[in-house]
Each structure stands twice: as structure tokens, then as C-alpha cells.
Image (cartoon, rainbow, N blue to C red):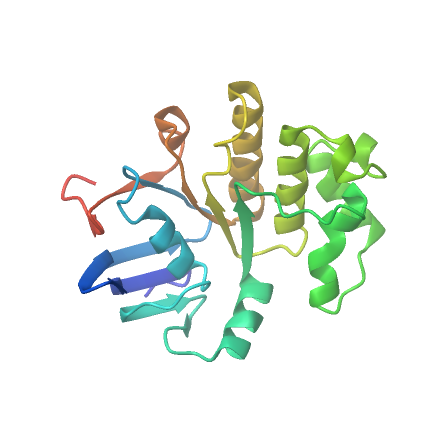
Length: 226
């Protein structure tokens, strides 16, 4: 294993019951992700993209297979141990922004630091707000923002703790093309500037082509030509 390998999954499976049927949402997937690399997971609806993202982000547990994140085996860990891994290593950006409506932009961005027991450094907060283009909106509440601006807050919140891995599930799905392109550029900047490992899903093939690598799923498995 090379020292820049951040995520390594082998034989990842996620099965669940639906009546008398066993649904194989993910069925034996191998995947590696390295620091400073952007990986896009492609596939039609129902192919297993979100299931894979949830496993790689330690939000769900595999039915079978092994998963290592930042050098630590995480499959089978207790929830309290997974919480520590998520907080210290992973940043998340999803389609739903999950902003706290009573907190300002700056307070929403700084929120993860509270869970880490860290005080928001004003210089670091300023840097992140500038990076996501929200310096002039720092004191605004979420209801005063556009959809694209709220997504930028969610990205800033994911980046403030300097995660090793940034996980994004359809992050531009609700945005217009121009805003989506700008948001995607923020992700790539984090990869290039900070060596973040980026794993995302998208239906936008133009954006996918800008990633270092794509992994295509069909029926819960990686397609041979991926």
C-alpha cells in the first residue's frame, strides 16, 4: 500500500431484504482512492452509486468486504469509533444543504469545528469564505441566499476542518450549469491546493470528464470498461 492511499475497498457488498427478495445494491466492488486525486462514480439510477458513496464515507456498513480509510480498517467498527473517523478525516457535500436556518453563513461554515472541540480561527474562516466566494455574505442567514450560495456554504462547511477526503453525492444536481461549474471548480481547487481526495457522483458527463478517473457502476458492480 502506498503512503498516499486514503481509501481502499475490497469486495464491498451491501445487501438488504425487500420482502422475500435479497437486493444486491452493491455486489463485490474494489476501489482505491489516493490523496490529491478526483474520482467520479458514474452509473444510471439504481446502479449503486449512492450506496457506494455511503460506504466510503462510513455512513453505512458493508454487508461483506473490507474498507480501509486513512490507514485504518473501518468495516465492523462501533458507531462511536466511526464518528471519530468521520469528524477527523471526511468532509461531506450532498444535494440537500442541511444548513442551520438560525445561523449565519460564517456560523454554518464553522459548525464542524465545534464538534471537533476547536475554535474557529478568524483567518482560516476568512480563507474558506473567500475560497467559496461568500466573504460578502458572511453575516447573512440561509433564507437570504440562492440555491447556489447555499451549496457554497455546504462546501465551505465541508472544507473548514481540512478533511483528507471530500465526499460529494450529486452536488450540482440542483444547480444551473454556470453555478454547477463554479461549484465543481471549488472541489478541484481543494484537490489541487490541499491534496484532498475527492469522491463524487454526478450525472453530468462533462464534469465527470474533468476528474482524474471515473468508476462506472451497473447493477451494483464495476463495469469492465470503467
